Amino acid sequence: MRVRPRRITAGLYTFAIVWGLFILVPFAWLASLSIKSRLDAFADPPKLFFTPTFAAYGEVFGDPAFLRAIGNSLIVSTGAVALSLLIAVPAAYALRHIVGPLRHHTLLGILLIRMVPGMVYLLPYFVFYNKAHLMDTHIGLIIVHLIFNVPLIIWMLTPIWAAIPHDLSEAARIDGATPFQTLVMVDLPLMKGGILAASILAFIFSWNEFLFALILSRREVVTLPVAIVNFLAFEGTEWGKIAAASMFIVTPAIVFGFLVRRYMISGLTGGAVKG
Amino acid sequence: MAEIRLTKLSKTYPNGQAAVKDLDLSIKDGEFLVLVGPSGCGKSTVLRMIAGLEEITGGTLHIGDRLVNEVEPKERDIAMVFQSYALYPHMTVAENIGFPLRLSRVAKAEKDRRVREAAAILELTDYLDRRPAQLSGGQRQRVAMGRAIVRQPSVYLLDEPLSNLDAKLRDKTRTEMVDLQARLGVTTVYVTHDQVEAMTMGDRVAVMKDGVLQQCATPRELYASPANAFVAGFIGTPAMNFLPADVTAQGLTAAGLTVALPGELRAVLDRQSHSQVQLGVRPEDVKLGESGSPARVIGVEELGPEAIVRLALPDAHARRQLIVRVPGDTLLTRDETVHFNFGPKVHVFTEDGQRIAATN
Image (cartoon, rainbow over the protein chains, first blue to last red):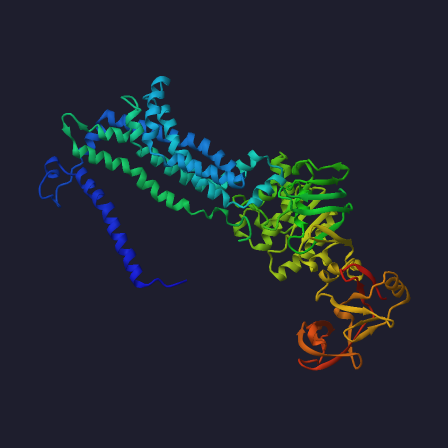
């Protein structure tokens, strides 16, 4: 291993610290805002020491609209992940068996779908959803989330799948397994870490999604990001509630973030081939 | 139990590249046949065609009396052991061995009994609850064998199953596998690039090169009468010495030595009017002594019971070496000059390597 010059190490640390501050300072500020009283929140200069209050949290979780938004977000995100997996897993399986340029082009096409800004899809979906009575429904939002979740899962699973030795599926074939049995009994158990990681990321994307949720819902299927914006109400902006609700909305990202990190390490194929 | 018959079996890839060309081979019921050859010779492709993993593009394949060209692997009544073992990492040893039975819906009690039986044969009983990652290389190899024997198939296909083991374990496992095969009496096709494995394990050995079968014979026959210079050079360690030889009135002249020709060989050479041939001499058929051609010793490799001596031939421009097998108590040292003779047995090949005959 080459020894890294000290100057480069120092540079990397500096970068990491500055970058970390950019991310952590707003977060810390928001966290402190969520536990400040209204008076403390607007004190100038900002108070570093104050008596924490959880009043904003109480208000947020006492708000039936917000509780409904939590339910909606859970339904839409979970549904979107489930439906995405149902499409993306067989797609990734098929892509594994395609060889040559077709596979490359298909993967690239799938990536392009993900790269197009949501705005592009928004208007056509808006018109179509109105006609198809999908506006303001859970299934409507779930379907639209497939646009970004399916490519994400396909792209995450394809390399993991490629890392599973081909011998295993051939051995299964000799042992008498049908392609479907091979998928269920051999491939999927080996990929569960990867599938979990992809699902979590997809869940977080769906959970955080704002644009489609805002336009394609009205009153019934308001999700959390939209609900927070609704705190910017006529009677004035409720900063404490926004901060408290924001703190809540990031929890899955933080909790799952650690899980993803653990499961991304695909040490699952150990012992399959000579190790 | 089954015989395997390959008739004009061919594999040509869509890009026109031919991996196997018109292979005719018949493997007897209960026979241990070894397919051997350098890498890329098509031996693995043949095995995979027998297994049903590779499509057959020409010729026919019979297992027993059935034509199986288009038959799915699982319907062929075969079991295969992969070079990588291909164990399922998420299953225990018992689950790995029992996987084929689980797929064919064998009742649980029956399945457990057969898994335990296979495990007992392979001395894996204590490891049934372990996962492949917790096993040594040799144990993994045995699990792969277990998965093959538990199905009681009529054919075993083994693709370089020992090449991932270290040398000592390989020797031990080799004898174990031969014993096992003899005990179970199942027709076996074994692919390897290692000619020592081929010679020691096979009832018969099929040597392949560039997709073409060169010779299929018993190990002894392969060694004694190789069909061509390739087989002669491939089988045997150290390899046979090849020398260009002139056909003269006295016999064959090579490296300053004249080998007298028996009457019938003389007749063959004259009939085919060869003036130049290749002389093939096994290292044990070069005799060192007081008379003969002089040569310089350029290396002595001590192997214990025997030693391998490398000689530089005097015709310097040829820069040819002669490998000689001598008893282990030899006193030869580097740079010494010795005299050598050929015989009693030498092989004669045409210049393009086809066998003409051998003396003795």
